Image 1 (tube, rainbow, N blue to C red):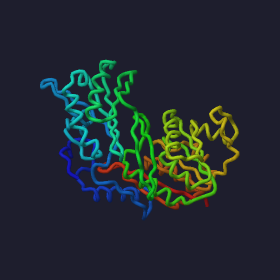
Image 2: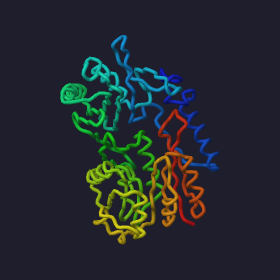
Image 3: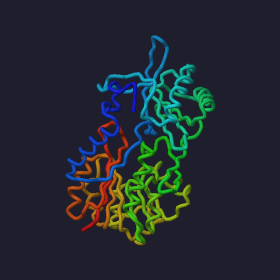
Image 4: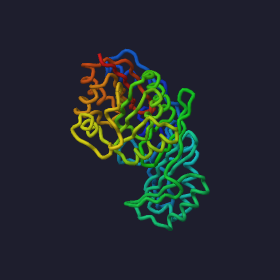
Amino acid sequence: MHCNYFGLCGSCTLYDMDYETQLAYKVEQIKAQFGIDSLDIIRSRPEHFRTRAEFRIFHDYDNSTISYAMHGFERKQIVPIESCSIVSEAIAKMMPKLLDAISQNDMLRHRLYSVEFLSSSTEEVLVTLIYHKKIDETWLHEAQKVAEGLQIDLIGRSRGIKLVVTKEHIHESLQIDGKAYRFRLYDTGFTQPNTYVNAQMIGWVKQHVGHHGSDLLELYCGHGNFTIPLSEQFGKVLATEISKRSIQSAKENCALNSVENIAFVRLSAEELTQALRKERTFNRLRDVDLDAYNFSHVFVDPPRAGLNEETREFVQQFGHIIYISCNPETLLRDLESLKKDYSVEHFAVFDQFAYTKHLECGVILKKR
C-alpha cells in the first residue's frame, strides 16, 4: 500500500513495512507472548480496509480553507491530509466531495471540529459532523442540501445536540459461508472497523464451534454481530449487553434476519451472574425463563480491560468458552486463570488494524 502520509500521520505506526511483513512481525510477537507455535491467521485486505474513521478538521484561517487532519507521531502535532489509503473505497471517494461541499458553505464550515465516517459493504456512507458551536434548524437546512447532493446519510452533533439530517444508520450485509446476514449499523453503536476481517472472524468461530442441540450464552453482544450467525448452531441463545442502543439494534437485526431463538437482554455480566445464581431478580428478565436454558458454551467479547475477576470465575461453569479479545495483554492474564481447568482448542489472530502494532485474538477453550 502506498500512502503520501506514511511517516507523518501517526495512525500507521508500521508504515515502513509492506503488508505481509508487518503481519508476520505481529504474528511472531503474539506467538512469543503466548508461548504458542501455531495459530490461525485472518488477514486484512492490504488497503482500503477500514470502514469506520474519524478525522479532525484543520482550519487555515489565513487562507480561509479547511482540510482533514490526523495526529502526528507526537500527540500535539496535527498533520493536514487530503486522502487516506486505509479507509474503505466508499469513504475515500466521499472525502474530497464532502470537504468541497462544506468548504463552500460558511454555515457548515464554521467551527467544524471533526468528521466521522461509517461505511458498509453496500457502499452506503453515514457522515457525522461534530461542531464546537450550537447547531440549529438553519444548520439543518444547509446540511440537507449536502446530503441530497452527495447521496449520503448525515448527522450533526454539538454539545448536547444531535440533529439527524436523513437517518442515523446504514445497512450492512455480511457474506459468511455463502450466506448473507443483514445488519443496521448506527452512528453511536460499536461496529467492527474492518468489514472484511469481521466476516472472516465470524466464519472462523462458526467453523470451530460446530452445531449443538444445547444453548449459547453471550456476554457483551453488541448489535448481534456474532450472535445472529452463531444462533443457527445452537438450540437457543441468551445474549446480554449494557448499552440500550446496542440492544435495540440487536433486536432490529434479529428481525431483519428472521431469527427467533435469541433473547437479547440489557444486563451487565455481573448482573447476569447474579441472576443465574438466583441472588437477584431483574424486571428486564421477566419474559426470560433462565431455567429453560441448557448452556454448553459461553461467548465473551469484552472491552480492552478483559474479564473482571467475578466474570472469569462465572464463565468457568461452562463446558466451552469462546473468547474474542481486542487486547492481547488482558487476554493473556485471563488465560492464565482459565487454563487451569481448560485446554486451548483453537487460537487465531485477526488483523483488524493493519499497519499498526495491534492484533486481535480469538480463543476457543474446552473444559478438561
